[in-house]
Length: 373
Image: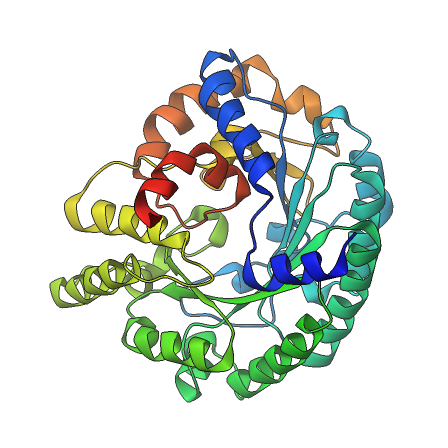
């Protein structure tokens, strides 16, 4: 693989090649509408753990006890699950949590994915960046393995405010200083090529006032900031935290809309997200239904650390790979009926677009070209 090209793509253009985008555009706009059942999954969100070392005010995962989280699968168990034909065409895998780096075997998980998934093109990691040294050690090892396989590696570090305000949001003293240490190390690692680094700020009433400051900080520090809107989900155990997440106050809602409308005008490394910000502004401000694609609806799935399988982030568990083959669960007639009648018909229209990845870009290529030209 050409290292110069790899470095340029990973740092400045975190998108697939134009040819693959065009192929995806044809697949999802011509083939998908005619399909009688979901296409073979290309994207997997892999929750490697539900344990977390932060105490975020807008998330309750950290409050779950061991019984509620369920036993985590081992690397050996995951090895067996990946033999299932359902996973044979995966191109994009996101390592998520909880905090993934709490698993000491995270590099072994990455090595397994890189070895077993022959079509894998991009591996992403969502992390809070703490503890710094473990996170940096893991990322350095995973990056080396990805480079050897010609796979792009992307790291998104959660960062919702700057300074002491961040410590208050995540409920951990000195959190910002430690996250900043991690970001400095990752930025140095990025210089070697093959790594795309960004931060993710979840917009809630707790973080909104610092959003513009974060934009300026990201430009100054050469670390792109991506914004998502906070959501209440049963699987996040945050139903009782709605006041810390939702924008019920009219003044706060007005400020959120002003920010989203400003973000949709911005260009730069994450310019393609302007399309998503435009959609968010329309849904939040005008009550419109979602029009942008969702990679879960097109070709994605979620595997939890307890073996539970989900169609998407709004899905109930449709089965457990510890008890039944993944393909049997995914293609089960009753599950497909639930997917069609409940998820696609009822949940999708109001589900906020908090991602804009390769699959979604391929489907909405025409909208993106129209926005950016």
